[in-house]
Amino acid sequence: MEYNQMELMICAAARDLEDGATVVVGTGSPVAAAMLAQRTHAPHLCLMFEAGGVAPILPALPISVGDSRTFYRALMASSMPDIMETCQRGMADYTFLGGAQIDMYGNINSTMIGDNHSKPRVRFPGSGGANDLASLCWRTMMVTVQDTRRFTDKMDFITSPGYLTGGNSRYEAGLPEGTGPYRIVTNMAVMGFDEQTRRMTVLSIHPGHDRKDVQDNCGFELMWAADITETEPPSEEELIILREEVDPHGYIIGRKVK
Amino acid sequence: MGARASLTPIIRSEKRVSMAEEDPARITGQKDLFTDPDPDKARLFFRNKSRALVSKLSTVEEVVHSMVHDGDYIAIGGFGAIRMPTPIIHEIVRRGKKNLGLAGHTSTHDFQVLVAGECIDRCDVAYIIGLEARGYSSNARRYVESGKLKITEWSNAALAWRLKAAAMGVSFLPARNLLGTDTLRQSAAKVIECPYTGKRYVAYPALYPDFAAIHVHESDVYGNCRVYGASMSDQDLAKASKRVVITTERLIHTERFRENPEATFIPYWCVDAVIEIPYGSYPGNMPYEYYSDEEHLIEWLQAERSPSGFKDFLKKQIFDTKNFYEYLELNGGIEKMKKLRARELLIDR
Image (tube, rainbow over all chains, first blue to last red; front, top):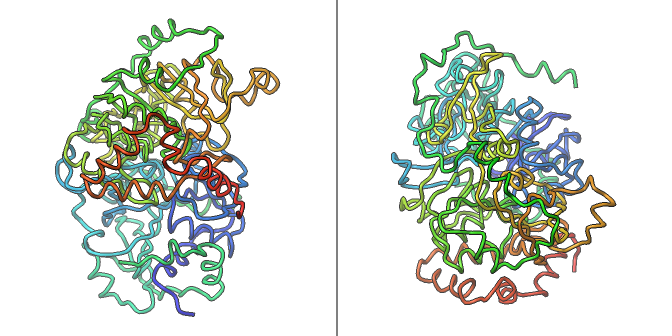
C-alpha cells in the first residue's frame, strides 16, 4: 500500500512502544502513534496526559492535553502535580516532545529564536510540560521533520534537557540517572544516541532515502550505527487502523510534511 | 512488570561537582521573582482571612471591581481553554485593569484575551502564546516579541510545585526538573543540595497569587465546590491564593456536600466570592458539560492576523458587550451551547 511520510513516522514511533509501558503524550502525532500501538501490538499501553488524564480510551484525537477526551473512560482523572510526581518517582517509561530546534545531544528548544531573551526575535510557547517530561521520564522520543534549520549545533535556547554536553553531563547536572533521549523519528531516518558520547546516531534509514540525504538535512555531524537497516515501511494493517480508526479525518496524517 | 526493569541501563555519574565549585550561572536563575515566597507573611495574611460560613454570592462586576487591583499578581484556574473562568477574564479586560502579573501555567486563550486588553506586564511563563493544536496567537506573539512583557521562565510542573509549596505553607519545594537548561537560567530558581543524599534539586519558591479565578461544576453559596474530570493545579491554586473567586456552572445545596464530603474539591474557607454562571467556560471546554467552540477560537486566531481588524473584533466581542451573556448571545447563545453539549457527549445530532 502507498503511504505518506507522516504515516511512516507515526508507524515507526508506534513500534517502539511496548505493551504494558506508560507513555506521557501531548497532542498531534505522538497521540496517533500511541493510539496505533494500542490497536496493534500494545493493547495495554497506558497513556497519560500532563493535565491529569490516565489510561483513557480515546474516542478521538484531543485538541488539548487537558480536554475532556484525555480522560474519556479513563482509569483516573487526576491532577497536574500528580502526573508530574508520578514521572519524578520513575513510573513514566516514555514521553514524546516537539520543538523548533534540536542538537546532537537531543537538547530541545521550544522557547525562542534570537539572542536576547527579553526581546526575542521569534517567541514560541516555552516549556509547558516539556522540560518536566524530558527531565523525569525514562525515555524521551521525538517525531519531527528533519532539516538543517531544525537539527542544529547552534541552539538559541535549551528549553528541555537532552544529554546536555554529552558524556555524563546530564547526570552531573542532577537529572535522574538513566533518563534521557531515546529515539528521534524523522521523515528520513530513525536515530538513537551513542552510549558513550551521547551523540545522535542513525539506526535505520527510511525507504527512498540514503546516508547523504540524512546527513545533508542535518546541521551537525551524525554518528552511524554499525548495522544500519532500512526502516520497515508501514504494513497494510497499520495503515488501515491509522486511517480508519486513529485519524479518520486526516488531521495529522493529512498534513503536508514540509 | 519485572521484565521492564532491565530495559533501562543504570548509568552512574562518576564525578560529582560540588556546589561550591559550580559555575553560578548554571545553578541560579537570572530573572525576577515577581512574588514574595515568605510563608510567615502569608500566614499573617491567612490569619486575617475570614472563616465565616456566610453566603459569598456576588457578581462578576463586583468581584473584578473589588478583588482585582491594578498591579496585582493573578492566576487563572483550569488549563488554558479548559474549565476557564471566561466572564472574569473578559471583565478584567473591559474594566481596563493594568500592570497585572500572571501565572502563565498553560495559559492559552486566557493569555490571549488578557494580552489583547494589554492588562499584564509580567508573567511567570510555563506556556504562553500558543493555543495547543490550534496554532499561535499572533497578537500575543507580537506583544511578547516587542519586549512589553517581563518574562521569567518556568515549566508546568515548576508552577504546579510553586503553588503546592504555597499550599503547604513552606517557602520552597525541591524537585528534579529544569536542571542544566536555559529554562533554569532564565528563571528565578536556585539549585540546592540534598542534606541526606547530596543530590541536586531545584528549590522552587512558593507562589502566593493575590487573586485567582477558578471555574467549577458545582458550588454552594459558601464556596464549597466540586470539580469533575482532570483537576490540573486548582486545588493547590485555591489554597495558595490570597483572594479566590469561584465561578460555577450550578449552585447546589450545602446538604449535598454533607452527604458526600469526600467529593469536596475546594473547601469554603479558601473562597471569597461565588458567582453562578452557567456556560462560564465558553468558548472553552467544560468536561462532561460542553466542548470547546473550535470555530470561535479559530475566528479569534484569524482576527488577530491584522492588528486593525483585530481592534474591531475585540470591540465587538468584549468592549461593546455589556457582560458575558451578551458575548455568548453574539456567538450563538443557547443554540450554540446545545451543539457544544452534543459534541462533548459524543451525541450525533
